[in-house]
Image (tube, rainbow, N blue to C red; front, side, top):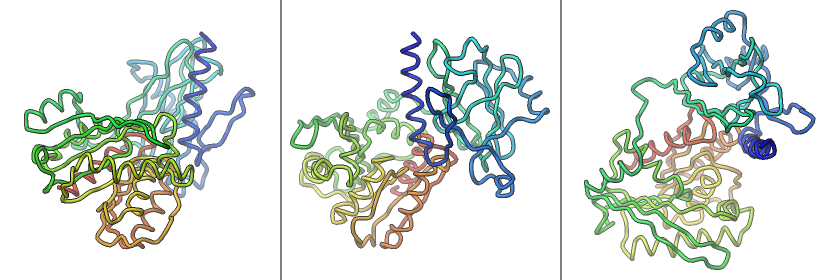
Length: 387
């Protein structure tokens, strides 16, 4: 049991380290290094907490946490420019260290503030209004616990229905949904591709806008989230390409493996496009993706401006400009979460480059990390701009 728990913990924390590597420091626990946020300083306070940090609770805050009503193991309390994260645990319920830790969008240890009660204060400008899902780790004999933090205004919150419910409503309205399969070829694995056609795009795509998504595994979730805020789909064709099980980075990042990258891009612009469009010419075409897929979406536009009219670039990963291409008349939506600082900086850099190349660029930045909490607002903004 302990070996399996340790394996899950290490895998989870390795993922956390990749997401937070640009802002974390390391604390030596003798058997592994765990990422933690830097401690708040006078400079953090003077800069109005434009950089994320953590600090201990004061006496009043400790009493407030002790008085909190815990419905489960983890809870939180918003404060101005901050959040207090708390966990109610016996030491016997901890795994391999004497403190629990949060990972994911927020990476930090909690400190013991009272018997069986741990807490820490996170400081970041406006974070109390964020939508976050930090994950509580280091629990013995149980899986990590996800905490749902939603500080948005009531008017900004949406209830996302189950995909099957959303799809049934859309199909009643005339939409079509199918999954296509493409066999493997040299440098390319077999691909499952989700195709969603709005009701005006079932028999002809001449008046339709097409979006080719490199991260097709989340396409259904993107659609359900957009449906929840009443975004129309009648004139859209959304194509979601399944991610590679072995070569996702090679497929999406030009500098990792040019042969695999070229094979995937060729598949999208030739094989897949022919299968979807069948020789018809749509009103416009866009490419989309998040993380490595965000970098790919921008590259796909740069390599094929004659095909694509724009891109939806979400939390772009490592990327370098290959050539100066004229992007006039192209529309790009770029965004990232302010808590994923490496991706955030890359999105800002891409914005500058895209504008220098002549593109019309819209930006969407949120108080979130490398997750759907960041990508959904970017996706929704892009779809709204296509209405």
